Picture 1 (cartoon, one colour):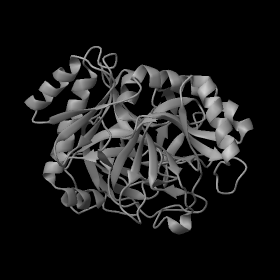
Picture 2: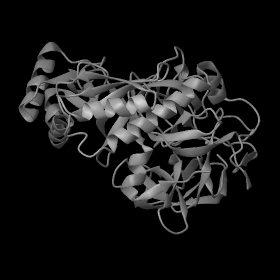
Picture 3: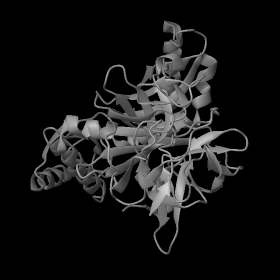
Length: 429
């Protein structure tokens, strides 16, 4: 099926103004349209072997997480190295399952090593939940939380990240830091690292129609802009739905940004986890590719879920700023509040100097892993830009600038988590 659409942009809670030109064609078949985008450029730069190895490591990660009792046995996370086809498993304590994992790795041609961690997943989750329940306790101390907990390739400390409320540089004074650290320890009964100077903003393509590709740019009557995530389907019976973020207005009808006659419907169901919502319009097996202002209708077929680990690399496909690649996964399993409650996030960092991971206006857009056959793996849904934020004058070419902020850091939720919490599957070719 051929449908007319622009390579549209992902979403933000901020409205962006402007009128686009006429629609261009985008294919709904699993054939990538001719031409080259940032994803192709990135794929050439890293090579097919690297992309294939990332897929193998993702499949191995999923196998590990499905082992009964794996987290009780001490497994916390893993750090993938696609160049070497190896895994460093982050683990607390001895367990026979270590050898089970190492043996399966050898069968798959994957080298597995182990790195000891100070806290188990149970301890990390318990501390995170306690801090979420008491997040407002830090504001009288001059600190506002941006994220809680998380797992990095580091010493294994549990951290809260945020910013000082009383200073222009967003950094805590020595006495404020001491007070925040003390309060965090009293809440969790564990030492908590406090990282300041970290802000976060919800990260918000223009003429698509049903079935909507992921990355289509939407607008509602109230002037709010949002976009579409990867499409989902029921486990039984017909029906495909496009997805968006739950922080997008759930009370209004949504339309293609530059085609008010094309409705995406309205939210009819929130996901129990992953900060997503379903729109009533159909969703497509395709994901928009290309720059935000590309009129060739670049799109790529979605092959399936992709489970990420530390050390992996992803691309984002945001409607406001287009595709960005070479974004390394630096932090996992931390919690961020989108205004409707906390959910587990992943953090990506743009490894190429002078480029960005996302800008406000890109949220809800797909986080993906390119495959060597031209398809993509569905990894996540953009939720926020974070860290050091820059204004539009420094953000390069974007669809809608103004007050929107960009960053080398992007926070996003897992596509598999969203689908599992809804009891649904991914729409694939």
